Image (cartoon, rainbow, N blue to C red; front, top):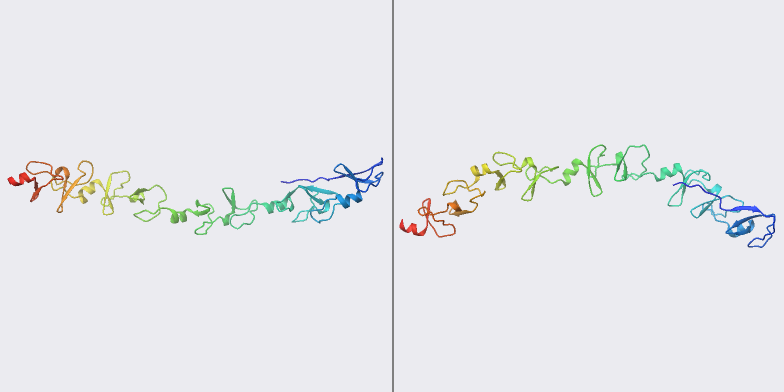
Length: 294
């Protein structure tokens, strides 16, 4: 913001008798100063009323031109740029928080945007990067991890730190449980482990399993068909795979043999023997009553 200054007081001569407010001397025909509705001779003004120059710390007498801004006062000759010492009595200027007065050119340099990397002024027209109301020299806008300038590459942030895309992926992206490479987009989760969609395949036929029915065995995943044919135990009754899918999810196991629960029936009377006493003879099972008859 720039301002212009004005003289604070008016001086004049009197033709009618009038006395100085302080020394009571007759001011008729003499120069005086009117301050706060009081008429004061120049001698008393210089001694008792004059403001102190903010630059040279000397009184600003009645015969001197005074400039003021925000309760501070200067001699006209003292009101200069703190950097280049250019007189500013009739020029635009800026007042800084530290009290310094500067011309427009020096003020722009001093108050210009500062680089968040090196904290030096980013001069107008120079190559720079702006992000979230902050500015960097182009060469100072670097990846927090590899320290290389990002320039026109895409980047991501973590807190206040900035990363190029490769460094962000290596440092923060989840790693695929299968290939151990970063998952940059999409992916699926199985048993609290992240996978690339393309890595989540049947162990046998390599068919992608995302969005399809599958099961796992010994840390490997299988499609339903491959699990049935290559992995699943065969029911000792019907000889079909015991998959755990749909009807027949309950299984009966005995001495290394397995049955669907609905297949675990007496060979002779077809009584279901799940959770009941039974007798096994060869590959067949019998209820106790039928076993006695045999």
